[in-house]
Length: 270
Image 1: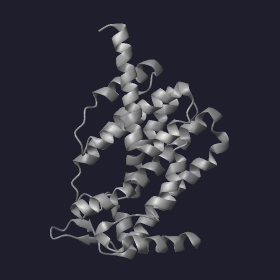
Image 2: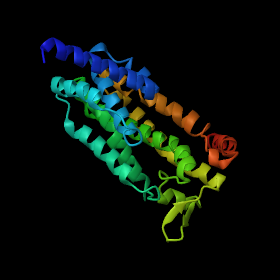
Image 3: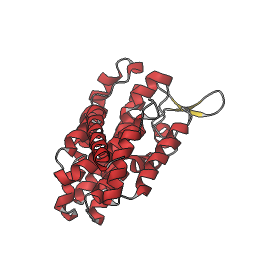
Image 4: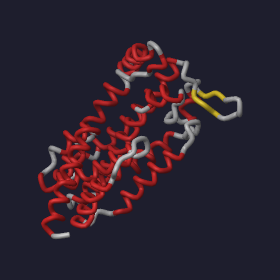
């Protein structure tokens, strides 16, 4: 293949990455537009990689186009493959879980969030030539918060599909009276307790919010050039306060959204 053809193929691949992020991860698409031009291509390729690996578990797709753009980024900017490998392995392990398998602790979900979301921020910082321990720490917290929010947003989908809540851990479910045993003695989450679900979702959203607070505490030590990379903190905060908590939609719960909105509003006002 000629150099000209290769160059055209890579440009096409990067354009495809932009469209994928715009179509399936619009909040991050808006954040990436704020990056300096020299960082934008790499960031879109990395975020498109995240989109593809997330969707691959449910939808058949051809990852080769994104892989072409990603290979260019790795080659040009020496991005660590270990972070990308962590992300893929975490997605695969999650896909292998039975719907009835419930994580034991919130920490398990935090590790999954870091492996799938923080790693993308680490890679973006590296691709931009930003070497900062403070920025990495902030990226870790922002990625964990973002990942937890996405897991919470997926609960209505899982509830309507198989009547399970696979991302409410045992320790949280038990605390709020949601944990029961099925006929085989395996733990499962009740889906008929409105107040219990409100409290469980609020507790997990509070964990996500605490990660954002820790990231904010690092703001004074994070170099200015890293700030645009960490913009996903803004839509994550919005999702915590607006979509996940105030407007969660659990179709199997009847009037659950209405009750959750006011129940959680009271908690924030305490």
